[in-house]
Image (cartoon, rainbow, N blue to C red):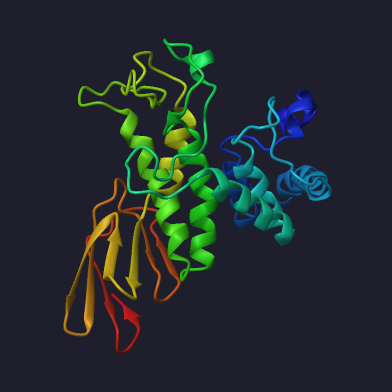
Length: 271
């Protein structure tokens, strides 16, 4: 609530990592803390209603930015403003492609933050700056609601995993990778990448899908078939979330980890 009360000029924009406030509101309701839940929901609804009235409510301090979409999508979807949420998703897909290249696949359009947070102050395409991780959140959220849209999975998972590409073998974290051909290397100044890891942590999961041409696929895990049973071995960083696209089933753990998950195709049961 501090942002709404003390920085109202910024509260009119969608904020990076805004999905965390949706999660907090859900938890307040689960725990029966109605007073605080009501305050938070009222404040967030006012923001969402403002965005509902705007044609393109995606700016930040810069009107062309690609950081506000994450929270705009989250709250407009939460409050049932589905047309606006859909428009926000389409804006994300307009600047977040899927192509067969590690640096561009799921890499949200980011051009300017080397000027503020890099050693080399250049205006150029930043590969897997934090737009990748945070914009992947609404893309994968939408995929779980529409598991037949394989394109969403490709874009969203590419953005999620792209967050890790800025860590080198020594553990150094770059803000992004310089894409112009005269450099083609990570920026050597560490920082400006925290939102990427929020997106990675919030999204990381194993996704299992049956593709009409490619068969069984595992994003973040290994998938094998033994007769009429599909066996999933999660290998993502957390191993606490699995999405089974054929069932539209989102499995999550509050503690412990998944070792294997088995899907019986005949009975459509999970073990």
